[in-house]
Length: 211
Length: 208
Image (cartoon, rainbow over all chains, first blue to last red; front, side, top):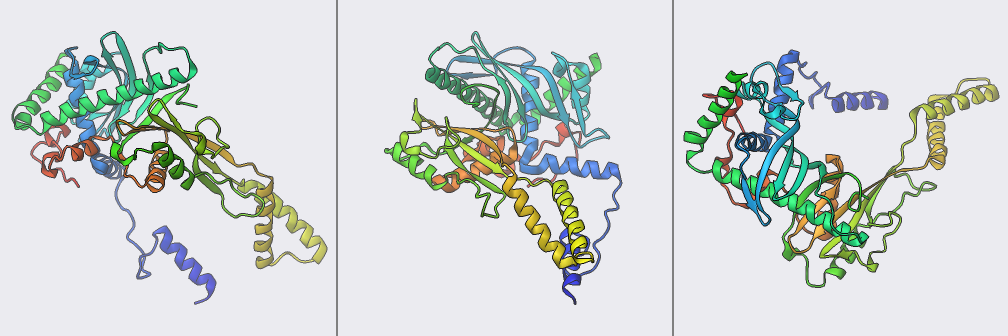
């Protein structure tokens, strides 16, 4: 085999056109809907993203009452979904849905989507502790914090301001950890399947019916 | 610098606070020096990318001995330089060379000559191209072991976590639900998906 033929064969292998035996690999014959659904499934299972989605969906449900969900050093943390919410899932034809609006996350439309099997994948959350409010966009896969708004800094010295800003970021992190802790405690408790899940489903379907 | 001002976007990691010895100053300056940023050698080197740690306040400085500790935290940054040579510019220069070659030798260049010329064109363009620089801040709380990586791109976050792991010989654990469940020693079985929430009641959802 000439060098050029060897390079061509290697290129075909690297592209995935042929297998190790040199034979052509099977063509992907899935239709677009199937491909989308497989991608959605892969996204859901990658790094157990479903746990993050279940967490955000659980927080949405629990936050509707407006009561503190967890306690941290500064007091009880009230969580409110505000602004855009992105839902993703496997069931049905829709694999992603985004809703905008100040209270969009609590709307009958979003509850209907949740009832159909979509879960919250990304949301803008407001955490209120006492008189201080934090806001951040959180994603289900990594719980990364994006475009956060912190309470106003009290110090004026540049170095102190940096330290205060970092302390506030860490406080925000501690609130998220507390939420995850509360969610995991509830999810691993016995009533999760028997009581919590049916109650969560009922909240979705009743809310959807009201719309 | 996002730590000091600007958009608040970060990924969180946790390391055992005991990983930092009493002589924190020496620990940080030595580990950061180990993974320090080394600039690309545009004139001689062939590398198109360089990445490593720099000081928080000066992305050109790798002098960590001056101190990276402030208010119980280590503050530093991770710099990534990338050299991108515009493919269209290579094509234009190569065509220009091919025309000159044909005029001189009264024949088109052979494949091998063209390949050699392409390498030379790339090398010359490389010398004239400035690398693009991106700097990501990192803060490490010594008492809690909380590390904030101030980057929006997941690729950058993962690269920085890997660099921390190598330079500091620590294992930064992400603060995801899975990682927090693992830290609480929750058994794998308890972390199976809830099909009822996914509209898949009665079906088994496979999971890792």
